[in-house]
Amino acid sequence: MPAELRNTQRLFKFDAGGLKKEIETALGWIGLSRFTVSVLLTDDAGITPYHERWMNEPGPTDVLSFPAHPPRRPLPVVSAEFPIFFKEPVSDHPPVMLGDIVISVETAARRKPKAVEAEVRRYWIHGLLHLSGYDHRTAQQKKAMDRQAVLLTRRVEELGCIGKKR
Image (cartoon, rainbow, N blue to C red; front, side):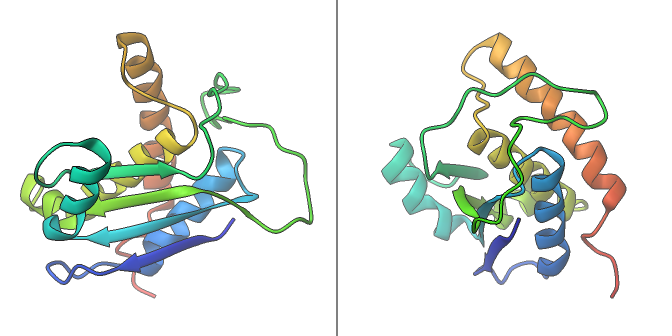
């Protein structure tokens, strides 16, 4: 369950190792341990070209996700403690790319200047849910996605890797 992480922004000192560990652990919790994701931490100038090209909207945004494969339908929660989106067989095969997540740390810092890491966490969880097949186009989809985000955020906050001193 490796996560690939690239930090090109220089506006905020970020615990990239802690973030990587959180994402990798979350992939295992939600039944995606044989998948990998790549995460790009950038600034507003870095995310704007992606937003304009792929969403046809001007200017920066907070987070974008790009699935490597057509998203599957999300499966219902197996339990409130451990949301499982996909049941997958144990395999010795190499990880499969789930997709890419692009995050503007500058937007996170602007929106939550005293809680940048928590805001970035909210963004990567949102992006991961999109890669897992969740969406928020309808009220029903939004409710299901928000429920999963709350459950996963609670679990990840308990883990609390970002900001821990090594």
